[in-house]
Length: 222
Image (cartoon, rainbow, N blue to C red; front, side):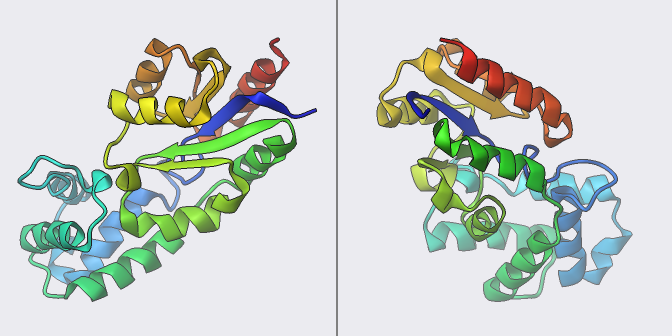
């Protein structure tokens, strides 16, 4: 029986898409993108590349790349990366390589299938911090059309763990906060949800059994 007064909300990275050592994960994709576009960066240590990528996330206005939606802001982000890594390609080439490397990242079909299986039991949603270039990939992995709600940071111009994005969720689902279960792999994102009265599950795709137990207990709780 469908419980329209409950919703299970899923994160993406770390919950479905791999962020795990020893796998073809998203950090490896970043490294491959940069090394493909400038072979000289192969001399850099892996952590150095990741740190430099992180340094490019914020523009002069203080907005993170996962909070912006315009092409101008996307191209400004690319310019920061191009300067940081001495990339000689144009923006279109960068986007092409970004998508190609993203396609290679491992994701966990068992988590996706379980999320979809809840459709007949409750509402389901996605709440994820990601950039505009990631939407095509998350759609292929998650099939966004199967979800009742999709909240993506770049479309909402705010990101987890900022309170604003949680408020948007609450305004749209229109159910008591204790009837929201949020599954995320980052403690800071979970903590904001917990403070707002949401039920929470701190886990990763590697803790699939924990996720299933949390979801089942949430749905059985009357």
